[in-house]
Image 1 (cartoon, rainbow, N blue to C red):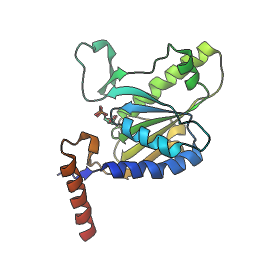
Image 2: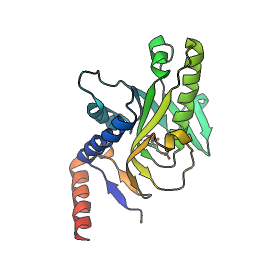
Image 3: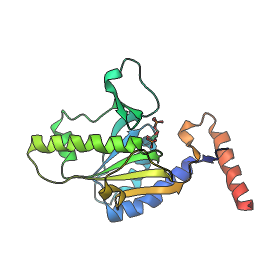
Image 4: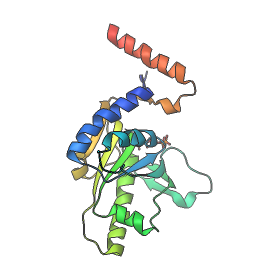
Amino acid sequence: MVEKLYVTYNDVHKLCQESAVPILAEFKPDLMIAIGGGGYVPARILRSFLKQPGSPNIPIQAIGLSLYEQLPNAADQVVEQVGHKVTRTQWLDLSALGSMKNLVGKRILIVDEVDDTRTTLEYAVKELQKDVEEARAKLGVDEKTEFGIFVLHNKDKQKRGTLPEDVTNGRYWAARTVGDEWICYPWEAIDIDEHDANAAAALAKKAQA
Ligand SMILES: O=P(O)(O)OC[C@H]1O[C@H](OP(=O)(O)OP(=O)(O)O)[C@H](O)[C@@H]1O
């Protein structure tokens, strides 16, 4: 039976809080790109912990990627990716000059809640790299953009997707590395009290073991 891992809002908050320390020390992002829907809440919490006194908040932009669902009437937006379909439901608005400038020569932290098969993250990095190249060409700027990744949980399993080596070696932060568990995030809960009770029960069981 697949173990269920219940993650509470407080857990998410604390995972972001502790991860902010190495992310600030080693990367200092200029911009976060949250992969929706699971990346939105962690990105917003992380922003509070990345805020430096005297500096503005780090902007968060959102992209929508869906791995398991195929939107009707959106066949032209469906991309075959290592045997899985990644559907773009939302993307950056690159028509604005400001948005393009945000991409070139910047440190961009991509945020999602879970790195499972890595299909989604591979897609996000590849597509964003293409956008950066396009923006660089249009703006005639030659500064390097660095991508980093933050996830709450990385599943230690065979990955279908791959990430650039410079990201995996030094710019990849997973608050927790877990097995191939079924992770239940609080924002998916229909009954949050039951969810929290399940999380507490699992904790008590672990303490007894
Ligand atoms: O590593 P992978 O195997 O690619 O899986 C991880 C992705 O799957 C989930 O997204 P989902 O498509 O379920 O959308 P959601 O975030 O809106 O729930 C999750 O939010 C990640 O983005």
